[in-house]
Amino acid sequence: MNLERLRHEFWQNGYLALDNFFESNLMDEIDKNIRNHFGDNPEFWHEEEFLTRSKTEVIPWFPQNPDLPEYSPEAAAPFDRVEADQKLQRLTRALLGDAWRPLYSMVMFSKKGTSGQAWHQDCPPDDSARFNLNRLVYTRDISPDIGGLTVVMPGSHRLGELPAGEPHEDLRGQVVLKPRKGMLVLLHGHTWHRVLPITDAFRFSTNYRACPEGTPADITDICLYRNMRYRFSTNSVVEERYPTS
Picture 1 (cartoon, rainbow, N blue to C red):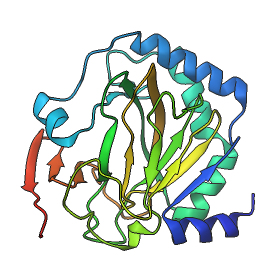
Picture 2 (picture 1 turned 180 degrees about the vertical axis):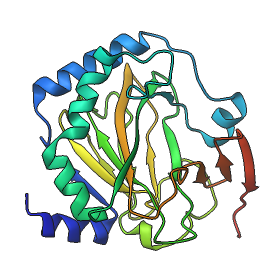
Picture 3 (picture 1 turned 180 degrees about the horizontal axis):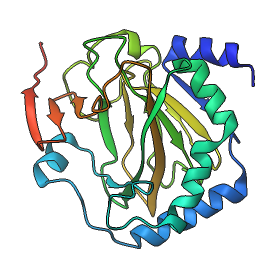
C-alpha cells in the first residue's frame, strides 16, 4: 500500500474504495455467520417512525459485543480477525493518527424490497475535527440487479451540512460504487452517502467504526438526514429540516 497516496485521496474525496483488500476465505466465513444470524426474514429493529421518516431500512447486528445476549465467541471470531488485520490497522493509523481507537463493528442487513439508506451523514458536521470513520467490509458482490449500491458525494466532508431535501433523490456529482467481495470502503463520517433500494435477494455489509483522538464514543448517536436530525439513544427526532427554497 502507498499510504501517503491513499491518505491524500481520502482527505481529498472523503472516501476510499479498495478492491480485494481481504482474503476470500475470511470473507466466506463472515458471510456464512451473517446469513446464519439473520436467516431469511429478520424483523426490523428500529421503531416505525424512524423507518418511515429516515427512508433507511436496515437491521443491525453487533457481533463483537459480548454484552449482548446473542453474542457467540465462535460467530465473532472471523470479525475479530478482520479488526486485527495489520494492513487495516496501518491504513487506519495513516488516516486518523497514532491515537485512533475503534468504536464497534455493526453488520447492516437490508431485506428485498426495502428502501436501503437515504442520504445522510453519520455524525453532525458542526465541528470538522470531530468525526467517525466508517470502515465498510463487503463479503459478497453487490450488483445492480440486486440493488443496494453505495452512493457517495466526493468532497462533501468539507461542505458542512447535507442540504435538506428529498431523502433519496440523485444529486449532481454523486458517485455510485459497486462493492465486491473483499472490498474495503473507508468513509469519512461527514461525507454525504446513501444506499440504493434493494430490488432482489438481500444486501449487507459490516462497518468497523473508528475515530481519531479526542472524539467522544457517542459521536454517531446523532445522524443527519435531509429531513431531520435523529438521536438513536432516545429514538427521537431532535431537529426537523426543511428545504430553504
